[in-house]
Amino acid sequence: MLIALRGASKCGKSWLRRKILKNPIAVQCRLGKRVIDLYTDALSQVGIDFQTESTSSKQFKGTLKATGDLGFKLLAKVGLEQKSN
Image 1 (cartoon, helix red, strand yellow):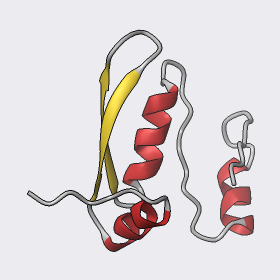
Image 2 (cartoon, one colour):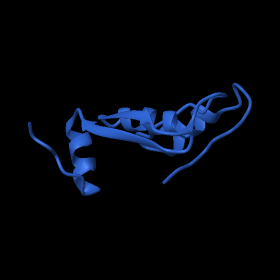
Image 3 (cartoon, one colour):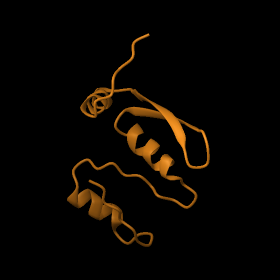
Protein backbone atom coordinates (compact mmCIF):
# COMPACT_ATOMS: atom_id res chain seq x y z
CA MET A 1 0.00 0.00 0.00
CA LEU A 2 1.23 3.47 -0.84
CA ILE A 3 0.12 6.54 1.07
CA ALA A 4 1.40 9.96 0.06
CA LEU A 5 1.31 12.78 2.58
CA ARG A 6 1.77 16.28 1.26
CA GLY A 7 1.70 19.56 3.08
CA ALA A 8 3.58 22.59 4.27
CA SER A 9 6.52 22.27 6.61
CA LYS A 10 5.57 21.65 10.25
CA CYS A 11 1.89 20.93 9.49
CA GLY A 12 1.88 17.48 11.16
CA LYS A 13 2.70 14.99 8.37
CA SER A 14 5.31 13.10 10.40
CA TRP A 15 3.16 13.13 13.54
CA LEU A 16 0.22 11.68 11.61
CA ARG A 17 2.41 9.01 10.01
CA ARG A 18 3.79 7.91 13.40
CA LYS A 19 0.34 8.00 15.03
CA ILE A 20 -1.48 5.92 12.39
CA LEU A 21 1.07 3.57 10.80
CA LYS A 22 3.21 0.85 12.36
CA ASN A 23 6.82 0.83 11.09
CA PRO A 24 6.19 2.71 7.85
CA ILE A 25 8.78 3.19 5.16
CA ALA A 26 9.14 6.92 4.70
CA VAL A 27 10.62 8.28 1.49
CA GLN A 28 11.17 11.98 0.93
CA CYS A 29 9.82 13.13 -2.44
CA ARG A 30 11.91 16.20 -3.08
CA LEU A 31 12.24 18.34 -6.17
CA GLY A 32 14.63 16.74 -8.63
CA LYS A 33 14.24 13.17 -7.34
CA ARG A 34 13.43 10.60 -9.98
CA VAL A 35 11.00 7.73 -9.48
CA ILE A 36 13.92 5.31 -9.54
CA ASP A 37 15.50 7.26 -6.64
CA LEU A 38 12.32 6.76 -4.60
CA TYR A 39 12.34 3.00 -5.23
CA THR A 40 16.03 2.76 -4.38
CA ASP A 41 15.47 4.63 -1.11
CA ALA A 42 12.42 2.54 -0.13
CA LEU A 43 14.10 -0.78 -0.94
CA SER A 44 17.25 0.14 0.99
CA GLN A 45 15.12 0.61 4.11
CA VAL A 46 14.03 -3.05 3.99
CA GLY A 47 17.49 -4.45 3.32
CA ILE A 48 17.54 -4.58 -0.47
CA ASP A 49 20.34 -2.96 -2.43
CA PHE A 50 19.00 -1.77 -5.80
CA GLN A 51 21.73 -0.80 -8.28
CA THR A 52 20.57 0.74 -11.54
CA GLU A 53 22.10 1.67 -14.85
CA SER A 54 20.37 3.84 -17.47
CA THR A 55 20.10 2.26 -20.90
CA SER A 56 18.10 5.11 -22.46
CA SER A 57 16.01 8.05 -21.33
CA LYS A 58 13.02 5.78 -20.66
CA GLN A 59 14.66 2.47 -19.75
CA PHE A 60 17.05 1.15 -17.16
CA LYS A 61 18.40 -2.14 -15.96
CA GLY A 62 19.28 -3.04 -12.44
CA THR A 63 20.27 -5.64 -9.92
CA LEU A 64 18.73 -6.43 -6.56
CA LYS A 65 20.79 -7.72 -3.66
CA ALA A 66 19.34 -8.63 -0.27
CA THR A 67 21.42 -7.39 2.63
CA GLY A 68 19.28 -8.58 5.52
CA ASP A 69 16.73 -11.16 6.60
CA LEU A 70 13.75 -9.01 5.61
CA GLY A 71 15.34 -8.30 2.23
CA PHE A 72 15.80 -12.03 1.55
CA LYS A 73 12.19 -12.74 2.55
CA LEU A 74 10.84 -10.00 0.27
CA LEU A 75 12.86 -11.14 -2.74
CA ALA A 76 11.73 -14.73 -2.15
CA LYS A 77 8.12 -13.61 -1.88
CA VAL A 78 8.19 -11.93 -5.31
CA GLY A 79 9.79 -15.04 -6.77
CA LEU A 80 13.28 -13.84 -7.57
CA GLU A 81 16.09 -16.34 -7.63
CA GLN A 82 19.33 -16.07 -5.75
CA LYS A 83 22.40 -16.67 -7.89
CA SER A 84 25.40 -18.23 -6.25
CA ASN A 85 28.92 -17.63 -7.51
